[in-house]
Image 1 (spheres, rainbow, N blue to C red):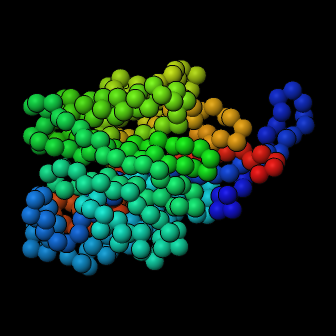
Image 2 (cartoon, rainbow, N blue to C red; image 1 turned 45 degrees about the vertical axis):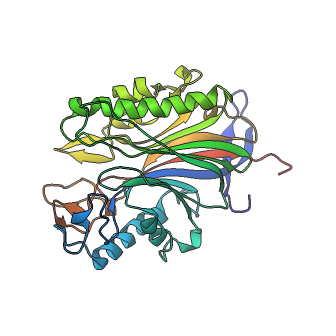
Image 3 (cartoon, rainbow, N blue to C red; image 1 turned 90 degrees about the horizontal axis):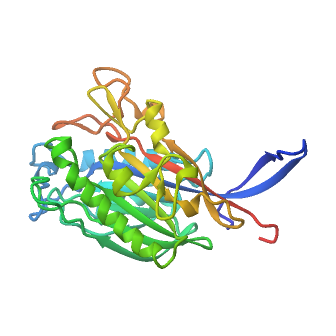
Length: 349
């Protein structure tokens, strides 16, 4: 508890002019698509040739180190408006292996955070996986598994996509069930690929249902680059989501990002249109403000000006790492997102 920030919130009582002072602990949970964080070594069983010194991108140690520095700069800052220690948990996508994650968490800008990792290799043909960074002072994993996502026939050219990473763990005295996703892309067309994303949504939802069948009020968090917007079918029907807290029923998820997209906010841009593929969704149990338990408070897109292209045809877009095979030296083609969770401090704690 000593490493969780104590936040004082002044809450006015509805029936009187008297004010009540309450204390809260804060935990930040985020997600970031790292845009092709590869090592420089060729893996003969995956299609990573372009990310080697002799490949199309001339990818070398200098570029790799610069990429790590850029990503560490961003991760260090996520959520620090609420807590000086930043993200307690950060889901990540587009990583080649656990080696690149180890390099990332050992970066001087992040080393004091003492991040640990959870990672499981998948059969994605490009060799990219998802992973989880966590600070042990906040979160203790209990179990982890990768969930295979079989793709329906003719939905995608690729035979395999990224597995879903499931991690169960303790946030203080609360048990959290986390799902880190990177669903199949829209390459080849949104309509042609939509069944692949629905397949991923269905698999994720089925796993959550199996948990809630035993623990109806389980605290579930689904995060990731879903390659669909908040109101798309895979999310609304596949994951069973709603955008209004009072509409959430048992076995459904709250999606706070619908209003963000309606306001014109997004995490990536294409042909001058914003998309909000990067999302963090929570179960009904995390909307209940029970004494001594964590609850969802607010969501944010981390889109600081230094992450944004300031000139040229991509002005206003996330400052990406690559344009084709040309190294642009940016951060990522996605903005990270994060959510704030609060836990009221009981007087005897």
